[in-house]
Picture 1 (cartoon, rainbow, N blue to C red):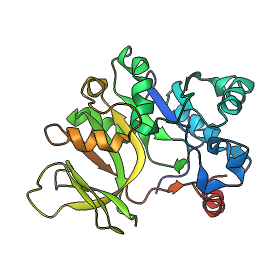
Picture 2 (picture 1 turned 120 degrees about the vertical axis):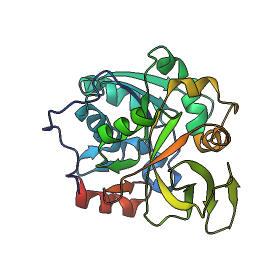
Picture 3 (picture 1 turned 90 degrees about the vertical axis):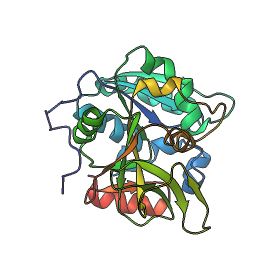
Length: 256
């Protein structure tokens, strides 16, 4: 197992790569904290989630970052400004009227990644992980799909479905039995939990058919019918969704 990310790690294999951190959500599961603060500023062992993930990206060499904001947007902007972006060039995408979810949020900031024309990293602000970003990125470059999604075989009620070649074939909610099928697999698909960390080729941004407020998963399922949307397994790594008060205590066991 990898060790949790540390600022002492000087290896920077992703220098020049851009990234986006989704930080616009309302964070209702983290109430009462989110009644007065954005979820991205929830603290784990003295560091807000947003800071931890900026430092996580920076550890791999990523210093050009887009952060989308909505809920208590000024608090996030002020936090980034107060700390001089933690040594990174950080842009803010303000979703003023309503949070656009992951798909809509990405498309609002699409210009930032299209002008750069290199695969970019996307992650949620409330995810803490020690996933090796350079390994994820290398896997993406090897097969050059539209997107590569980090996944593990951990328990989850909502899973993505993959064939033996790790091509996305669908989505399943085990609690409700709902399924969305993108393509018919040749054998029983593997159900894997999405880690909310992905690498996207900017050419995908021109193929997105959804508009307004939508999940990027809807886009992946739409495009997977005719294009490669691949999974990247990182079983054994730490992956914590810091979405509830009790998950903060769990995160503090692993991230100092």
